[in-house]
Length: 148
Image (cartoon, rainbow, N blue to C red):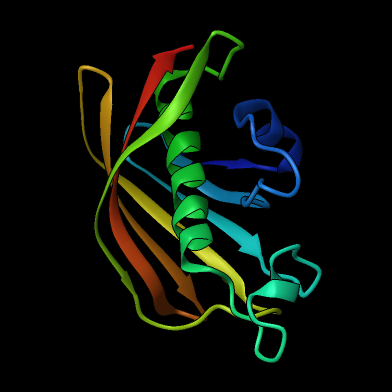
């Protein structure tokens, strides 16, 4: 079963808020399998004035963060849970990160994340960020939920 999520539901599943919420919509989720989400990249992003004023490019670390937020949504949907005040969803590893093309204002970043495995609360994901069907970035991400 494929599920879509609008910004209101995303806000219920992610603790992130402006300016660090990097998911605008979820196009599809197959709990236990994969997610496809999108980030509309606007010239109004708070990082563009400093990265770089003469040729704005979305920082690679924020592309990775957007993929991680999509992964968090996938894990919450797969478990049928939501974040709470007693726990935090942490990055614990990034492997094989590669950046293939710049992401610029006006681009629509499509985030595709698949679960590779979930063992004892440690999730491993394969993540790809695309613009116009071209890979912009890719990585394997590892995340876990921990009590505060």
